[in-house]
Image: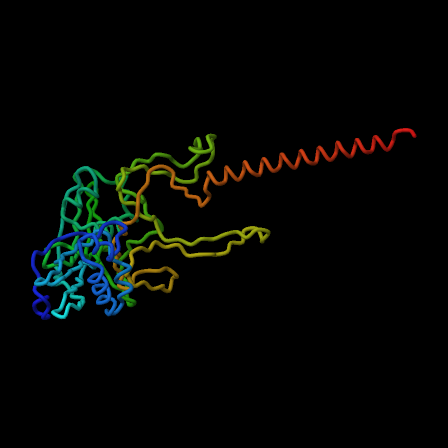
Length: 369
């Protein structure tokens, strides 16, 4: 690329990655570019369309190839800032820098995968070579008709037909397309679903009888979990006394994918309003993934325009235990409470002292002349 564009020759190409909390500027300092060259490199990027978005969104772990400049050798960088794009920056003979975005060569392949469940559906699907994006699609689709906690048995089988986008240079899967076909056989009973695009371009799945795969709620929002707390009265884990538990809790190893059981509507009964009157206040739907064009459909839910499922957000963290959060700082509130308590005690003392002085004054005034 550099030779083709007429830049200075490069040599001794080295590799690095963008570290956590690093900017392009701090990374260039770390790999021994001087301030003058750093300014020229960043200025060359700023001439590109959407340069601000590019510089803000450089991902942690981004692969970087570089050549440090010298009197003979030109400075150069290749940033793998996007799954399908590379950013090239190279030095010219007049010591200025140019930047260009180049599309990486990719190809699409239709893939048929099948497997037999051994210990868990998730693990068996990964072993069958199914990418995580497609696996999440499978679980989301099957979750309305399959209870992954109770229905899965060793020896059950599955098969899926999907397309994947492959980076030709790295020979790695970088994206997947919506499934064309999915089938699972549980204890001899077969469930089969086929892809169909509606008139608005959204992808839907239907079984052999033409029934939609979508039901009201998913049977189980998590695969391979144990039921740690059932519906009904139980000892509250925080309050310590028996209380009605209007739900079920699942426990699973760290890293197990969790799925929303379904879209929904949030309704409230207004205070002092007519008994039984409910007011719709919001639509609830699960969306994730940046750089994914979304649109609000006629039913009020937000979905990707092409009907695909965006890639999972790797910044999401799964925590065990109670997931309730609060914006209250307990230490600050404790100190504030102590201060208020002390102020109250002082005020009480002032009032008591004032009362004693008042009573003493009144007593003196009642003394005989």
